[in-house]
Length: 259
Ligand SMILES: Cc1cc2nc3c(=O)[nH]c(=O)nc-3n(C[C@H](O)[C@H](O)[C@H](O)COP(=O)(O)O)c2cc1C
Image (cartoon, rainbow, N blue to C red; front, side):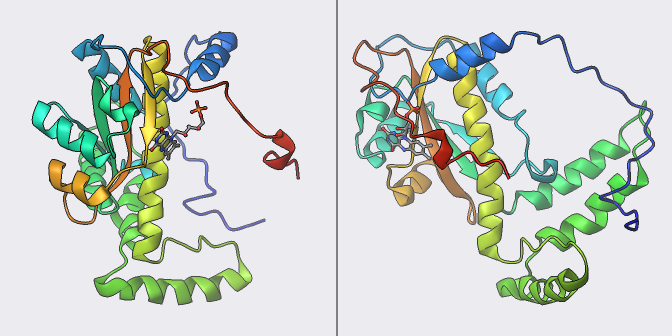
């Protein structure tokens, strides 16, 4: 049997959580089917509390190591909004939107989140946090996500992991700044989908947009170095001409494989 380690061991916990009383798969089916990319919105505004609620639901998305490498910039100022519309090439999905949210992937966020996680563990009163979890954030997280000056540490890791991987299953990355970009983008994209479903569930439509001038977007919202725009999500009430055509998906056999 494989040696037990931080990944394979089932920790002894004094915590249980019910899976909730969501027992309505049909309503989820409807929600997923009802989400379409909307390109034209009406002038009806979205109540602030709905936007806030949807953003709060978005950040409940699953994410790598719970390090939450995302940021959401809800563009409130009319001036900034206009500039973002222009940076989105004035596409109607942006120009007619009531709200614009810039979803940003932040590869360096792990440094802050790791500390927050350890603080959160330290402040737990009712739950005994397993030592393995503390050790994961204290030791493994910096080892895994730090790529070092000019990515040199990443290269060293890549070699070490290669040789380790000859004998046993081994995570091969992230071992470069590029890997870290992908790492942050994955989790951010999941939160984006959650945001769009949340808006739909609350009666509003959305459009994810990557058709934009990222450099200009960065400037408008003054993005920190290292972070990058994942997509911009517009939201509002669907106009009668908001959906450009029936949904097209190709034969599932192309995409879904049973192996
Ligand atoms: C990452 C990403 C970027 C996209 N960028 C744009 C965009 O710039 N403009 C646009 O009108 N739609 C954009 N879309 C929407 C897609 O065109 C749309 O999701 C696709 O055609 C499928 O349609 P559906 O969302 O209605 O199912 C984007 C979608 C994704 C996921």
